[in-house]
Structures are given as C-alpha cells and as structure tokens.
Image (tube, rainbow, N blue to C red; front, top):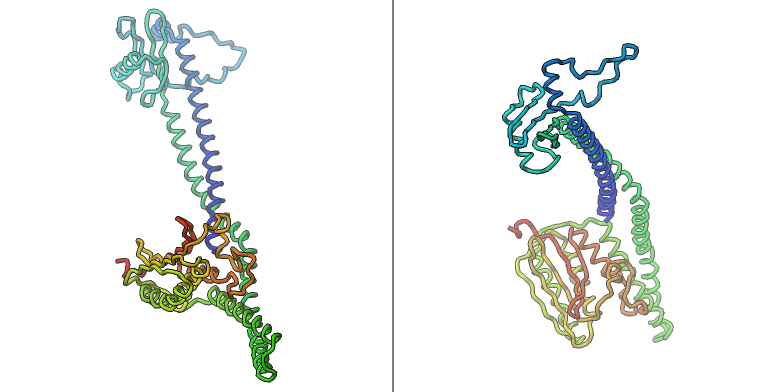
Length: 418
C-alpha cells in the first residue's frame, strides 16, 4: 500500500517538474530562435534596401568606389552585422533575364542552382521565407526584381546545439529530480507508515491481551451457571462475552493476515471455491435465497489455502447477510487473461459511490445503527482485502442492474496461463 503511495507521489512530483522544465526549455528555445530569425529578417531587409545593381557593378570595377572616407581622427567603428553575414543574390529583369548572380565567392554554391532557386521563389509569389537552409526576401527594384538570400546554417546549427545541450542537461536534471522525488516521497510517507504499523501492532497486542481475560470470564460464567442454575444476569454476561470473543478472533485474524507472510503453494482454486461454497448451500436455502453459481475448472493459483478459503467464506457470508428474502446470490469463478476472477453478488440497494471507497476499511459498516448483534463488526471485508493484497491481487465493489458485486482478481499460475 505504501509502496504504491510512494510511486504515486514520485510520479506526481516528476510530472510537475518535467512540465515546468520542458516548458522553460521550450520558451528559451522559441525565444532564441525567434530572436535570431528576426535579426536575419532585419539584415535581409537592410541588404535589399542598400542593394544597387549599378553600385555592385562599380564596386566590382573599383573596390574603392562608393566607400565613404573615414575620419582619420576617430578609430574605426565595430564592423556591422551586415558586413559579417553571408548574402547571396540574384537580379532578374522583368522579362525574366538574369542580370547578375552573386554567390559571395562560395565555391560550394552553384550559380545555376541559386538562379533556379530564385526563379522558384519569384514563381511562388512570397516576399519572404525560408528555402532549404537559406532565408530569402524579394524586392522590386524598379527595372528588375531582386531575390536576396541569407545563409541560415548558423541558426540551424545553433538551434541543434541548443537542443542537444538541452536534452543532455534535461536528462541529467531528471535523474537528479527522480532521486529528489524519491527522498521527498519517503519523508512524506514515513510518518503515515509508522502510524499504520503502530495501529496494526496495537490491534495484534490488544487481541492477544484480551483473549485470556475473556476466556477466564467465560469459564467462570459456566461454573456459576452450573451452581446457581439459570440466571438472567449470567445469561447477559455470557452473551456479551461471546460477542467479545468473536470480535477478538476477527482482530487476531486481521493482524495475522497483515503481519504474517503465509506459506504459498500451488492450489486448484476451482476445487477450493467449490468446496468452500458447499457448506453455505444449506444456509442460503434456510434464508430463503437462491444460489446461482458457475465455476470454471482447473484454475490454479499460487497461494495459501487457508486464507483463500477464508476469503471465499467472507464474501459469501457478506452476500447472505445483505440479501433480502427470496432474492438471488451469485458466485462465478472464471479466467480473464492472466487472472482468475471471483465474483460474489447479491440483490440489494446500490451503494453510494462516496461510500464504496470505505468498504474495505476496518470497522466500516454501511448500517451504522447495527452494533454487532450478528457478530459482524466491519472487519470481514478488511480481512478479505488483506488476503487479496497478500496474494498480489485486487478486490473491488461495483453496483449494476440492482446487484452488488464483489470482484476479486488473483494472478494465475504461469502453467495455467499457458
């Protein structure tokens, strides 16, 4: 039970931390990518505005043409980002003639390929965008159309590097957070686990301590009844003492089931359930009820026969107790995937959903007005749950079609599954 709680706490903590971590990384990545993309867009826009086909031709003939004279009294300014970026351009006339292709002296970039890409961009009709690893922008320069490209490789490499380091850092962080979450889960659950263990120990100790005085009282009552004969007060003492004995036995059963690991062996669950059901047939008949049963054969589980018999008798006894006269009690044992499924049902009013989660708690009773005159103290279903958990199974209650069903799933032996 507490292991499951620890797993849920770890999962909850990690889920929150993963969402926060992933969200933070996404925001950082998107913000960085958007900033670099925006800067490239501005550079392209500036390049297009300053581009002049005539100026480019002059610059090719005379590198000093068009350059501003520098003030000798001032040191040179930092080189602008425009001059540090790699641009490619294709100038195409209105009639489709290629006027000039600038590959920025990059040997790996073919003029024909760049021209074809520029023609495809013009045909596409978009003024800006990204093709392959090149960001582009088109502009009408009067007598011709300019398609300018900016190498986007740096952005892609930066984004890839950012993602790589993000994954590495995120993975290491998640491992550290996992151990932190486990530590926090242990700290959170430790007081509850300690309290639960003390409660179980108290029940066990109380049961053993009360067993002896109850037996002594019962022996003395029997001796007095033989000496003085029938007596109303002695009868009351004996009745209440019997109720106390029944309660102590159930407490000891619960403590034994929860604290002691039983001896396990291969058991034919089909025969066990059938044999345990037989003694109840007369009880069911005497209570004016009808039994409907279906038990599949050769369903084997690894378990403790004493506890599994007790589990079956608790569920059948509970169904008889809460059934109305003339109604039906059902018991089925079937195979479902890798589990043996035992369902015990009775006709009865639907149990409210808010009460179902408390059905397997100790001393919980739907009818709070009853005080144990029927020797039922709300411990039977708690014992049934403890037995089921010991056998690595599950138990649940459901209400449908006017019936209340208790459903137990136990893992089948591997040879049975095959």
